Length: 99
Image (cartoon, rainbow, N blue to C red):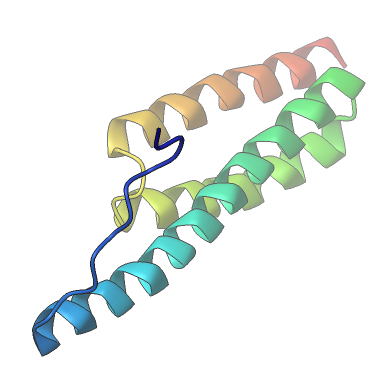
């Protein structure tokens, strides 16, 4: 009656042990960048909903660099990054038009 994941076996070869160590480090780095990406997008959306034009434009500029970095590293596909930038850009421009 195993309720969880099966226990992982330790690699025997030195190359396998090294790969396991690298996977842990890469997973942590990717998780951090993914979180940074989502936070940057949320900050722009919050500023747009609040109607703060200056904050939205500054957050959008920061978000663009974060999105480009994450897509260059291959964490998210470049088309997803472009799509998110495009959608947020149109929201920020619409906010600027109404103000």
